[in-house]
Amino acid sequence: MNELQELYREVILDHNRRPRNFGELENADRVVEGVNPLCGDSMKLYVKLDGERVSDIRFTGAGCAISVASSSLMTEKAKGNSIGELKSLFDRVHEMLTGDGTGAAPDIDEMDKLAALSGVRAYPTRVKCATLAWHALIGAISGSQDRISTE
Amino acid sequence: MSAIGSIAGSVRSAGIAARRADFPALHQQIHGKPLAYLDSAASAQRPQAVIEAMVAHERRNHANVHRGVHQLSQRSTDAYEGAREKVSRYINASGSDEIIFTRGTTESINLVASSFGRMRLGPGDEVLVTWMEHHSNIVPWQMICEQTGARLVAAPITDTGELDMEAFHRLLCDRTRIVAAVHVSNALGTINPVQEIIEAAHGVGAAVLLDGAQATPHMRIDVQALDCDFYAFSGHKAFGPTGIGVLYGKRALLDAMPPFQGGGEMIRTVTFAKTTYNTLPCKYEAGTQNITGAVGLGAAMDYLSGIDFAELARHEADLLDYATERLLELPGIRLIGTAAAKASVISFTLGDIHAHDLGTVVDMEGVAIRTGHHCAMPVMEHFGVPATARASFALYSDRSDVDQLVAGLNRAAELFL
Ligand SMILES: Cc1ncc(COP(=O)(O)O)c(C=O)c1O
Image (tube, rainbow over all chains, first blue to last red; front, side, top):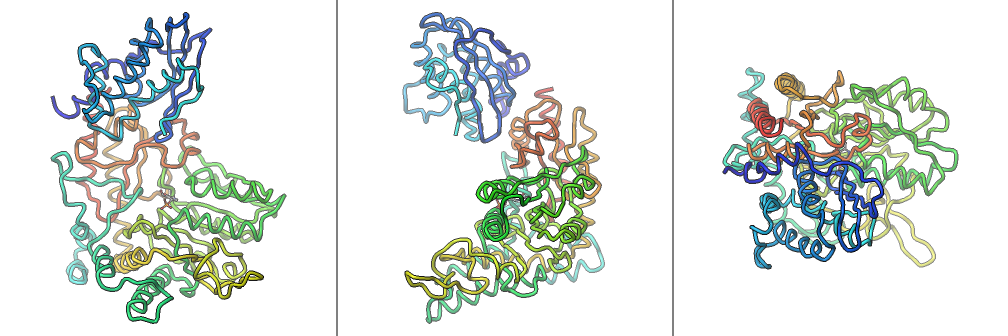
């Protein structure tokens, strides 16, 4: 694989072309706006909760391939999971995207498709594109904020 | 440099072509490809002469200015004030006391907004800007308008990215106290009809500030011929260092306006009852300034003085034409900013590929371009795009840079479209 294919893996290109769970969600329990002031991108995340579990999740917005694919992959992964599971998944994803490798090594198998995002680690200027959706998810399931910024 | 100049005398384009060798940073590989630096509008590279002037000052002459009686302080003061002289001569101010050193265009505009604003703005007054301003020529005016009760008015732009002059003349009125307009737009490349703007503004008694950040690297500036009241520019876009910039102001206005910041150097006498202020230009230079930066800027003025601007204009027009032609060959290309009078700056989008993805892909081909909103969000709003990619050329750019960019864009199209 050359450098470009390492970053823009097939999974990412696919989720960018055909984002899953894209669109508004009526009757969402939580709506969070995530913005990346560095590039002006923004996304809106809609979450429906069934007790402690995410029963449905959708997103809207415009962004680069990395941020759209990351949002799409995140929603796929989040649906059906509990708040507790998602918080620990966030930590592992965050470590995969930003870590220097000294933290708990993410289990690539368990991350399955999400591992496709790991290519951004080599591009510090693009890491925030990948983390935006995940910060929005944490904001939504903790119910603490309705606006998340990467800065 | 003088040798190059004389050799180039007969072969018109060789003079500019040879300039590329003066810029050490251009001669390196990025991701295994030769660097094609097409981000000069964000910050230009510096010629060896500028780097050397700064290093020489740091090695031998550094001390604080205007303060000591010792030899180094004298040398440093001479170098600092010498740089001011160079700027003054280069832009044809009527004297070096009209040249205020600042941190850059942004600080220059903030100075005018604050000092001119406190002197001249009140409820019912208007500040007229354009829709194509950089945020640095919008926000300082918004801030002072909020404080003084004046109103900020923006003249619209057309779909080619030109200032709508009819609307401009309509919006200009006897309530307008100052017109603040960009000379050359960083997001669109548009060269504004500044002569017409200045004459019309003076016709209603308004002062004019020109944001010259993007004009200085491309054209020779003559502030007296322009008859503008203020002219702001940054060292780092004109082949000098960062952290230094210039505010030119007409003496009578600079004399009348209150100081910007308070502190050392800008005072004559201080008692707790009353402080009297220093004369120009020190009145506006509170605290220890960026001395080495000024020396570098002076060297950049020397460098630019050696440029044949008629030849540079031909060189850049040729590059702009060539780049425009090559980009238009790409399916899905959309040029943002197609003004008739345009500097060598091209903003574009390619299909629905996000500008950041374009930026990353062409970087792999060794091409440096700017992606984003270019600190001109109202421009993006006007054209209905969140961001654009922008290739900007300088005197050291050539056709091979364009070819490399096109190769990079083709690669992006393969990947995403
Ligand atoms: C047109 C214009 N005005 C103002 C600025 C601000 O310049 P600086 O950041 O050097 O203060 C820029 C820089 O991007 C510019 O392009």
